[in-house]
Image (cartoon, rainbow, N blue to C red; front, side, top):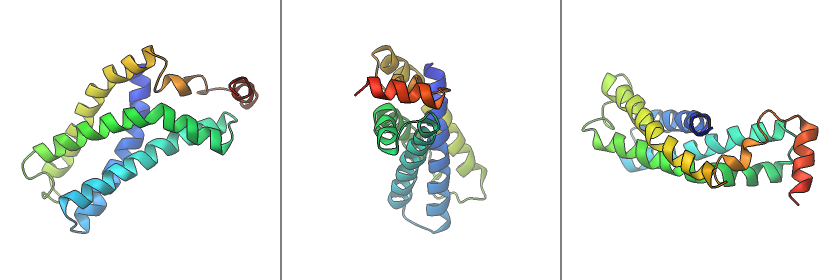
Length: 154
């Protein structure tokens, strides 16, 4: 379950991270502004994936947002901390430009490192009923099952 949770997190983070770094780099923004955009977009896309999945399972929008915040916040934060630390640590990666292997290779490597670091963290959280454990029972749930579960939680 920890690998699945981390892959889910990685998907949202990667979409946001790639978009943010590509937009900021193409626009010639400072490294700090580019990283802020990438982090904000990683959270937006990470939460959006969970919200969409829980809406499909029958949750209301308000409940879906609360579940996403509870399920994903810490995992996304860990992933973003690690992947951006790697990007910043590689000399020249932020200024390499969108047409270089250094830029894209560093980005791919940073996401791989973030995944490896975040899996055990998610495993620890799930073992305590936190993080992805909050949303797990909504995955693949039929709308009526999710609605029943939602009613029992109130």
